[in-house]
Image (cartoon, rainbow, N blue to C red; front, side, top):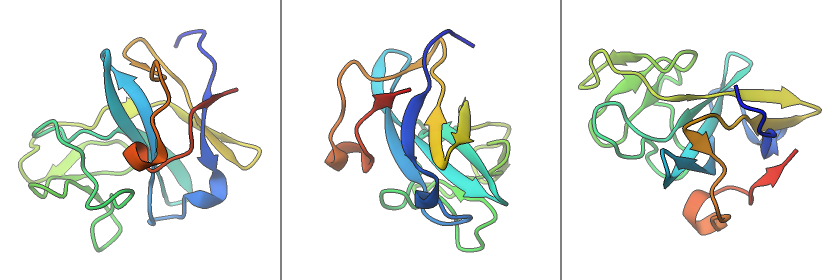
Length: 139
């Protein structure tokens, strides 16, 4: 872990169990990208919004990551499915792949992510229309 401050994503109430996820801007390996946070069985999990099969965003439309049973995260393009707790591929063309986790914590009814060596806050804040999330705030 780095000494970087945690970055605010959203209020806890915005992420319902098995419901819509919240997208947030990140810089991944030096390029603008999107992370997302979902809640599954009461806990929050965050990942880089990039399929392990083909490097494209997973969500069907902004924030829709779960497939119809609400048991797996699913890539909208090729149907790869992932275990929400680990990001491990559970079926489809992502065989052996895994989503890139983002350290996340929940405190005081808010959700935050922790930057690391490869995932950083973007150099500039992206707009809501690009990420579907509030602008980045450090804590």
